[in-house]
Length: 582
Image 1 (cartoon, rainbow, N blue to C red):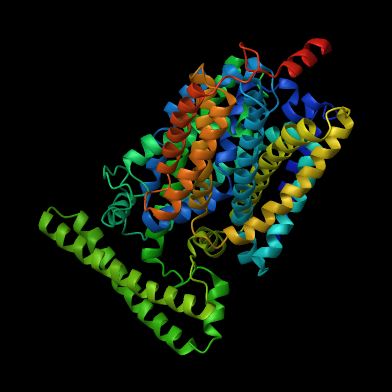
Image 2 (cartoon, rainbow, N blue to C red; image 1 turned 90 degrees about the vertical axis):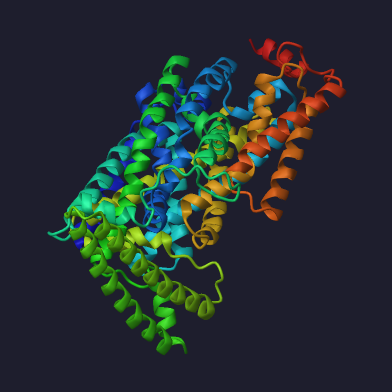
């Protein structure tokens, strides 16, 4: 990268960190540090929620997914507007009226301490792993940019972000999200325009999209009922509905966001912002991946997008075989380009037979390119011993660094790093909040003053940043990062959601039923994950269903705990303590 691009990155990151901390207020008090004194406007909360989703994973993993398979991932988001309406009507008023700091604190008021602890523990495990995937995304970019290994870049990203989160609290996180949201969207739009301008003069945007369509990359509806299919209309409207209900309704990283809003109505408005805009923004990200595929149809791509593995094979005993594959790959690319040009010409004709024949010819050449690339990937796996090799996360950074002009490269790199750091800081804030409140204050020391608890929270931030960095080193090689995050989440989210559904939707549910149901739900999901080919999005529905059904049955055959009040299920001692404090 040029000095201009580096200057843009450094100046932007320095400014956004400084400005986020500058706007923080009352961070020496618990409510100010954890919940921004419940004072943020709805639009800031809404942009913060959306910015968490439009993270570096979105810019790297989702664009790579769009390049490889097209728009099918969009089906995962069809249930989001429905989920947001349900959450706004149910979860938001429950949490706001309970005056809680964490979502799991509500479970102790409704059930008992063990249910709160078990659910919070699962959140910490899941969110810590997902945070690692978030760190892995920019780590991949930085490793490509400067030739530093992914492990080092993971630590370089995680530790500074931990320091920024410790000082600013949730206010710094939220206001940083607001600013980086504008940069991310601007960078995505600029990239899309650059890709369209990079098409050959004799190929229009419409013709280019038709070329992509012949490969199935523009398919946004798949009504297959095969439970093994990852992205279908049914997984997106049923399985993903439970994923979104759990993520936005029970995940502390999201609940903490809308608990910072001034009122219930403002919290609801912040969620509706995502309901309206998430699908269009996700479509923009994926269409960039599709345009990258079209761009590389007319501009030769590298056979491998990961330069580290490319160099490793070139220096191995299999170098001669690799060079021969490169020649074969170049010939296949040239034939595919010619077939694409002929297909574009056919689109300008009135002969449907010619269109069909040339579409078939292009598809055949595309399969030939994929076949040669599969041989190269198999060679990499044999040389490196890495059976999980996948370079999909390197597609977008490779395009940015090799085909965009000076200045725009810096802008996009700044957007990627700012998005990652902001998302990471939000997740670290949620992890440290839950650690200090759901565990330390609840089980270790409940008589410490606010200053002591804030010190514990900051120490927890450092711990979780290291945990996430270590996880990131592993996550970077697992394939599409957006899939990695959703796989992590789907393993836990459905069961956690089931506990909250019991709390809100079944009056006779008790703590024993909720705890037994949660254990049963996790056990069933683990079995389904390990021993069946059922797509991971269905795990959310399965987990929630098992927890709710088992929880109802166990609650009906076990008595309500004597230490809980009938009104709220709150421990009597806790109720007396709160009454004395008031």
